[in-house]
Image (cartoon, rainbow, N blue to C red; front, side):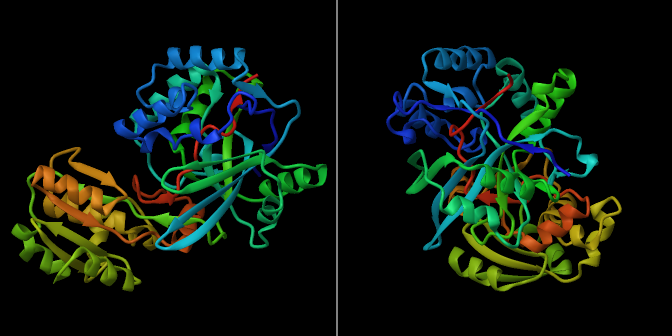
Amino acid sequence: MAEIKPFRGYAYNKEKIKDISTVIAPPWDVIDEEAEKRLRALSPWNIINLISGGADPERAKELFEAWIGQNILVREEEERFYFGRHRFSWQGKHFVRKGVFALIRLEDFGAGSVIPHEEVFEKHHANRYRLIEKCRANFSPVFMLYRDESRTMEKIIEVSVPDAEGMIGDGDSFAFGRIEGEGNTSTVKELLSRGKLIIADGHHRYQAALRYYKDNPAPENGFVLVFLVNIESPELLIMPTHRYVTHDVSFAGNKSLFEKHFDVEGVSSRGAMFEKMQKEERAGIFGVYEKGEFYIIKLKNLGDIRKYAGGDFSDRRLSLDTVILHSFVIDEILKPCADGVFYHQSPGYLLNEYDRRKTGVIFFLNPVGKKQFADICLNGELMPQKTTYFYPKVPSGFVINRFE
């Protein structure tokens, strides 16, 4: 059972920061150089100054302490749970995702209360560790999922009054506030402590915080800031992360080899490709782009993959498109050089990148279904890196956990 608790968070002082839109930011790992410049230009106190992947941890510590000294950031007088309502749109539909900011006790994944869902890149883990080590704080929450078919916590959040509201990204808005009342606080704590929690995003932040706690086992270091969302919520959207094999490899040049294992069909456009992909409800369906041509490929026999996937994996994991793509298509058929895969969620971004490089092959994927996602996680298996993209990312800057 996970240990959940409210906390005395640090938040931006409303007397000093009139518009919270100027100081919040997406997580550092989705901010490119141009976006970082825009965020820094919004305000000298934008959270990007503390969370940037290129930030010097010592400088971040100086800024953090200065902001507290200047009352830019102020500490809550009482322990609280905090809520967030994130309004966003996707494919013409409007959503409001509701979640709670809280602290959970850090534990090894083997303990069973906190479950990872994918493998991670070690270099990002080390980067986040240095930031925690210097600042002794969590600036960005780990995004976690709980399960509650009654959606009790969402009902509490729906009627809670926000303390701050702002815009983020292209038309998204966010409302942030405190969950009031002992009864609501007790309900939230009991509800979130019931079952297992799955890390949706922020594996690096969680692992860095756990390692810091093990290296510095003081009680105040034993918790990490999280944002918890109900996996049963229809507002929880899972998107795919597409792959661009950037080295000089060719789909067309290996088409006869692909046709031994896949049905291959040329399509007229990107739109036609995605329309056909989304109609399929089985594993091993990919869109392909090379030199102005789009294709659909459909795996003929899942059994072809088992000897290449490695390990004693279940059929659930074996049928993941990312397992099929990496273990078989990329590693066995194309065999690019190491580190030759570029990841991104935007098809348009990858197509523009292809136009710039003019080499390689792009593979487009369907999203992982919620049931498949939960089944794999709750059975103790890890997905390959960047199998999922939970949209939208949880903004940073609403509340900070300082170890004190």
